[in-house]
Image 1 (cartoon, rainbow, N blue to C red):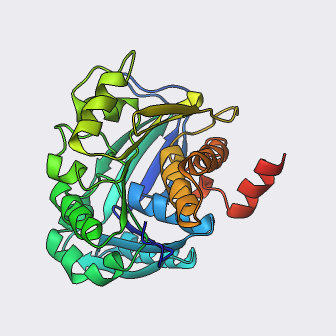
Image 2 (cartoon, rainbow, N blue to C red):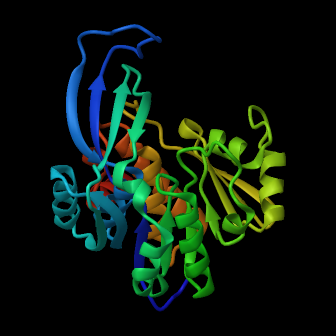
Amino acid sequence: MNTKSNKIVIVGSSNTDMVVRCTRMPRPGETVLGGEFMMNPGGKGANQAVAVARLGGNAFFVGMVGDDIFGSQTRSQLAGEGIDVSFVGTAAGCASGVALINVDAEGENSISVASGANARLMPSDIEAVSGVIVGAGILLMQLEVPVETVAYAARLAKSHGVTVVLNPAPAPADTLPPELLENVDILIPNRTELEMISGHDCSGSVDEAVESLAGIGVGTLVVTLGSKGALICRNGERRLMPAFKVKPVDTTAAGDTFCGALCVALAEGRPIDEAVTFGNLAASITVTRAGAQNAIPTRAEVDRAASL
């Protein structure tokens, strides 16, 4: 990590989440009545930026919104969290991103996303704000914006000694370009994403998938395993950091909270084991609440939970 900077730059998506809580997921062609509706700010990039800011990090968000009311609300809401939104662009004549989310009684979710302006974030936009990226300590990204944009930002950051953290979500339909992965310092997939990226079956052991990514050049792999915790893989060693036991209500932003928390801990100089434990604890609070950004805890809440 660039030890001269505590800035965490998040390049990624912002959406307005329209959430229906229902007793169970509808089957194809079925309507399930009796749900509760909520409209919340979301998007994996924005969620991670909020997590960084609430947990005490110095957050800068790079993204694209539409010239509509959702875009205006996104800027205001993120700025209200203490996030620097100077590097958020506006795509003229384009709608902002929207996500339609079903959440069942067990807290599991299914999500459909209309990317809107998020799909307009281009490498040229990254070049235009390159100063904030090369001056960061950590660059955190996901895959709700174009892969070529993510790859460009990763290459730019890596060439200036910035630690590049990639959460490869949503899971890509194709394997990621090797030139992207070789510029990633820390990769944070869940089991499904690991399988799709590596091309190896991860229903049992993840060993082959881990080895294949290490061969490409990914230095540290942190595989999130839900209620089982997170598996740290680096330098040929593997360590499982256990999860904190809670009763989940909604898992929507758990992964985003984990990623943001991990980056905050790393920016504070903590070793990877402590950073993952901090991420697990923050995420364990998130899943006990409904919504995306609404569910992300503050630093005080995490510190209080850690002291119990």
